[in-house]
Length: 305
Image (tube, rainbow, N blue to C red; front, side, top):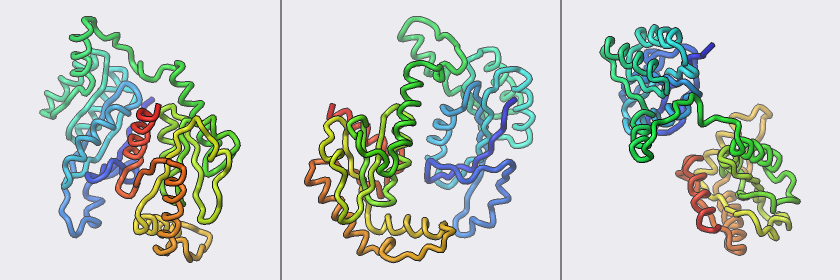
């Protein structure tokens, strides 16, 4: 069995709007009053999870700021019968088709159906495989889902995820030297999501909050193994994020200094002083996505090894 997913892709970010089982461009038109937007359907057909397609499709869609992609994701498509069912859906909502299917017979079937319907389609993986084949002098193995094997690398990522969840928000501070990376920062500097993203790449990541006037754990000060990185942002950015956090809180939380920009500026100054005193690098996350922050941290790891 396979599941069809629909996501509305924002042109200005790499994140989707909320997923829905049945979405059309018409249902969103009332919310787009000030700026005209165009919509197009983007069909992503994969014989595995679809992660590669999703990344490629969103990277391309992001270049068109006035158009939004309505994504239709079809994972685990491995038979002709499944392909036929996919194209029944595509016929209802035609658009661009991207696919990653290593079975050449199925790939030809997709190409032929697209040609018959007059729709553009691209095999995202095939040009890359051709380059590899040309350089290495041997054809690809054509193994479905080869990147998702349960090998040592996979279990290293699972181990990193377990470590990161156990060391979130200052938990288990005694064994900081077991971490590859430790992120520190005041509240709402994206420490936890960045930690999880890094863990998914096999990097054991702990994160510790910086609280004004509260000393950091001695185990962190004395740690020699991990890369310690301070995450900072502008007071305006943090105030905005904290305000949204409060609005979504169901416990009738009353904000005081938590969203006050002057108080936040003081917190940030304290965080910067700590990082400067110990020689820890800092990354400003004000205008960075989680992915960009993680990439900067990986680059820092490469320089400090």
